[in-house]
Length: 95
Image 1 (spheres, rainbow, N blue to C red):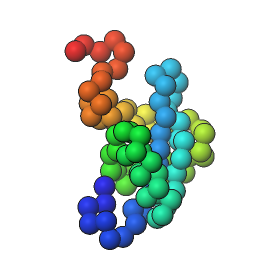
Image 2: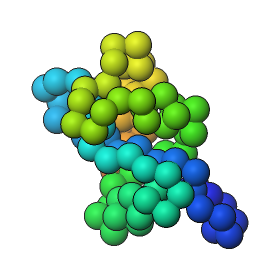
Image 3: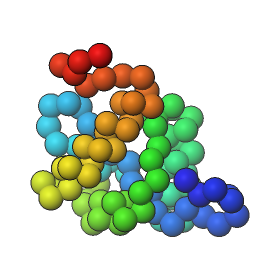
Image 4: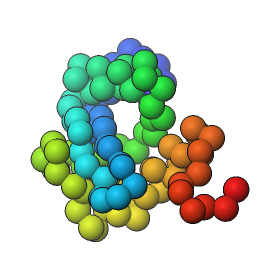
C-alpha cells in the first residue's frame, strides 16, 4: 500500500476467484481510480496485497478476462495471501 498517502497509488488491479476457473480481472485503474479500487476493497473487507510488478502485468488483461496461464503461480500466491489474511483455507486444504 501507499504508506505516506500523499500521492495516488500508481496502479491497482482487482481479481475475482471462484475456485472453479482461473481468476478474472474485475477492475483496474491508475491514480484516482486505483485509490477508489483500494478504498472499495477496504470497505468490503477484501484483502489487499501491494505488488506493483504483478499489477503492471495484470493491467494488460482486459476487464472480465481470465488471467493468462503465465501468471497463475504469482496470482496463486496472492490468493493464498488473501486466504491467510481472511483466516480461511482453500477447499480441501489441511487445517
